[in-house]
Image 1 (cartoon, helix red, strand yellow):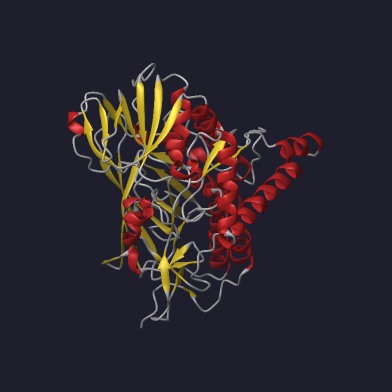
Image 2 (image 1 turned 90 degrees about the vertical axis):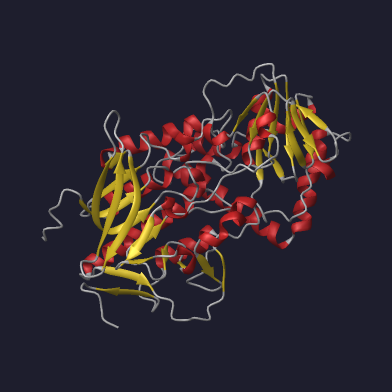
Length: 498
């Protein structure tokens, strides 16, 4: 054991983030890599990540809980789409019951990580903010650095620079930082946006507001799905828990994958089916083509889910409406559109999207040289070219986040166990092809992706550099592919000389 290994702030693995993916990482590290020490550094004072941060009305999953939940901890409700507090409780209880919470250090905001090739160690710098105590810097060292921090900016959401914001006499809020004292009962509310957050907010706020208007620049595809999984309920009734959970999970993975593939191969057919459902739910008087028919193809951007058709029922009952147009400015009493139409409002909710942040805003360096992630290429959707002993847990854009995060966590454990068995210290993908064609890390046309695409790593157009939005392909690649494929390099310290 070296002096560094006896340091109380040295760990075999440092995990950044205690959300869904961070808790998954903890589970697999202590079950598949039991001899390895690990710590989870969490900026906030609570477990849950996104599901602890977002507190806006009606916040819920837009992926089914049998796949958003963990494979190792069955979701015990028949509800496919769960409310945010229920998801947060599920993650917290998982961490508590498995003892993962004892490995979490709260209030640690990781700001930088520096790799030392001679020592084969990461030095991780964090700022500790404890209640009632001055903030102070803390430095950890580790063999492997595992980012489970997602790729959203938790500090602030996206706020377009609309003219006249200061003229509005009411209250303007962003869903990412929902004020606990906001009272919108019997008030006129305008929700700006057409994505998943807006589609969630509108029916929930309409239950007590005087009226809610969803103001969108352009439409999104909205699909109504039942909240309760009837087939899943039958399986859970007649089969043991683990068996029924696995069957429900694979059923939902298969259905989601089939729908996605149909959307990409027959977009006109899927578009027609989605709009036909909207017409049936809203009736002939509603202008579906104007308000619910996007100009892009299904799955060029994420679809929005309406559990039990809630937003459709709210609009049909007159409690809310959808207005499509461009904002000219805010006024004292609401919003004026470029068409001249004015929408009265007491409260304006800017559900205008999130901002992406690379590795949670952590600055990386390798032997003193700053790492520009936009110049790196992702390997098997988990590691990065030119960056040693570092992995990122990222989810799918067309399926549940947790599916991919679990695969990556198991893959990291596979790497660690192989390196330990062979007495190797370093693994790093190396791209020897300067002509490798690449594309964006996230293949969506959504605004929040396009605004930050230049900051993100790239992906290649062929394996092992390709990111497949396909659980089965990733399962085969991350679980069964050979670790020594000529691209992923391994060595023992000190670093090899060129």
